[in-house]
Image (tube, rainbow, N blue to C red):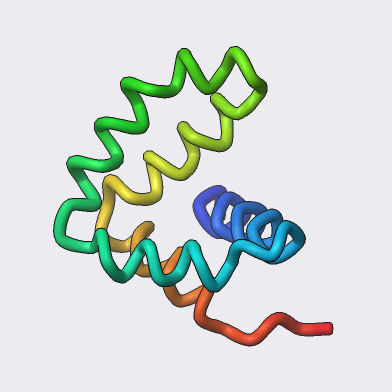
Length: 83
């Protein structure tokens, strides 16, 4: 349940900023190295926290680290937003 709320919140935030299509394309391109990218995000988290983005980066890293989280994020981004 918590994972679904994390995915929903990240997707809603990406859509609100107009970045959902870009994020979806980026996810598709980086699929093979998603676990490595997740670890790099965890390393960058303290720096991102200085600008207030540490929590979001951590949530994204957690999602990318596991195949089911990655796939849930990709599916949610690919769906048409409900209005």
